[in-house]
Amino acid sequence: MKKNYRYKYFFGIADFLTLMFAFLVSIFVLRIDDSLNFFEFYSSIPEIMLLVFFISVIILMIFQYNGLYRLDIILNRTSHFTHILKAIYYSSLKIVLLSFILDSRTIIDSRLLFVFFFVVSIGLLFLVRVELLKWVFVELSQSSFRRNVIIVGDGKAGKLLAAKLIYENPLGLNILGFVDEDRHAGDFIVAGKKVLGNFDDLEELVRKYPVDELIVAIDNESYEKFFNVVDFCKDLNVPIRMTSNLLDVVHQRLKTEKYSEIPVIDVAPQYNDNFTLGLKRITDVIFASVAILMLSPFMVFIAGMVKFSSPGPIFFKQKRVGKDGVEFDFFKFRSMKQIKGEDEDRKKMMIEFMKNGADKGASDTKVINESRVTWIGNIIRKTSLDELPQLFNVIKGDMSLVGPRPCLPYEFENYDEWQKRRVSVIPGCTGVWQVWGRSIVTFQESVVLDLYYINNMSPWLDIQLIFQTVPVMLFSRGAK
Image (cartoon, rainbow, N blue to C red; front, top):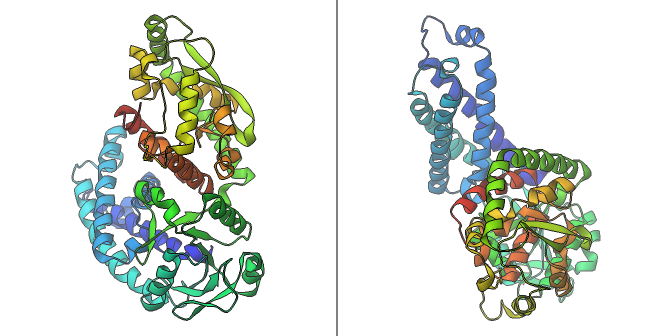
């Protein structure tokens, strides 16, 4: 277990045992046959243990989604208890749903189960989590959970964070010092903490000191410089977190952790290994194949509507840029009236938007010619149903279910160098900015959100994005 995340395993194991116990007590109290004692009852129906195990794992995922393993939540009693109530409420609803899907008599023949579980689990989790484990964590924060940190950069956020952690530090973070390109080793930054060296010295510093975490805190610099520093730090095999005004869109759109009220963002590239990427590919093929089979009647209906809406083909095929800049054929349901050649007006508008949109306060990542959109095109674009043929791109291997959106070749040619990091992974049908940003973020912000995904790719993040894509499509949030 990495030292940085040891407390998460600590809380996670305790949560699992608490939830299992709450379930078993609830089922036992409301059992039909009250002639059996606790052990006799469960030995007579061993499959209940497997079911309770499975449900407890699902609830842990709900806890993770609701931020119950973030330190700023754990250390705030009110926020901690509120998040527990919310997570258990949704978990109880899942139990009710399972009772309809499964034969409820194999669990318990009573609708009071979820009510009893809600009361028991809330009481136990308050005692175990909010009172006992929080106290244990604070007590161990200067020993077992203590982490040595180097702050990379001397930005305003980094200085403020260092000052807060020095004078009010329940997190167990020990600031070793700063690394900065524009200062000399030995220069004082804040609260007696010195510059340890510059960026070129960082690899040696990581070997010299017992560094458990790097915090990249660079403000008011170019994105190119910021992400170059992040990429350099990723090669040092040390957990990384970022805090910068350059990443404001991530704080605004996503639930991020806070260190002493300063937002910090994880960089977790450890999932970009062959095993995880292979598993992602297998999952993509299975899910895409099942989706095509289930949605085929609906896709045939959309195809018919497209055909009758205006002259032209059913499918729109276009060259897009995939992983490492390799082009591929990208498929959609046609949603616009067909024209000869490329839409030069749209091309000029998009390049202008990419270059100057952020400076002019523009807030729309989709530049389209509204006059060309057909009546059915307007509907399927709003709900993203025009994207369904991309499931075939997924099976071919050109795309993944989750990833940055593939860009057009002329867009890629006009990218700044830092923006070209978008093509370092396989593009996806859905992604971070499509779910949490949609068309209400600037082009530059959409790139930042995509780079957040690239730096934090994980099966858990993919699952969240896939499930949250459905309501985004149904309610047409931010779509054009």
